[in-house]
Image 1 (cartoon, rainbow, N blue to C red):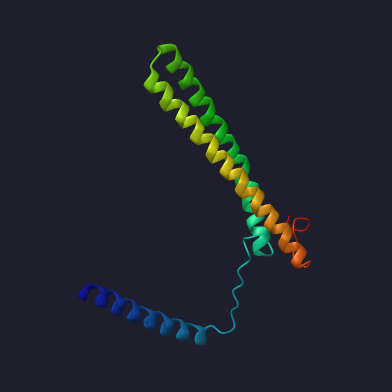
Image 2 (image 1 turned 30 degrees about the vertical axis):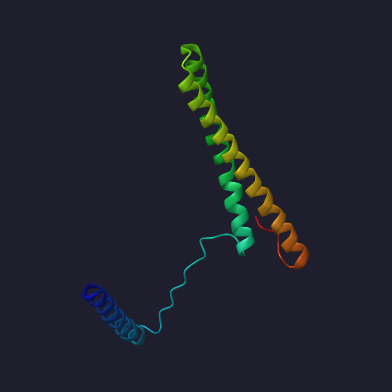
Length: 132
């Protein structure tokens, strides 16, 4: 408890110190204006989420395909060695990978359907035509 109080006190004192320094600095340099550009090109949260999905979906598909290929080779090797325990283990892993792929595909489909539904509720949403 003492440690938590010490952390809280240190954070409070440093916050007030930074705020007073910033106030003094802003009074001294009132003529200077700093403008930070928006690094995110999306205009709203819907477009941001859509662009994230569009960027991550091909990556997820490639990773899924590579893992399936690797597990396929492991399945062939386990079948050739006639090891029933290893065959079951690899078969279960392939089944899990296919389930994960179906979950990702369903999530993307649900999100896209939700975007369409949101656009029907509020036509001012810019999905997907002006998101780019």
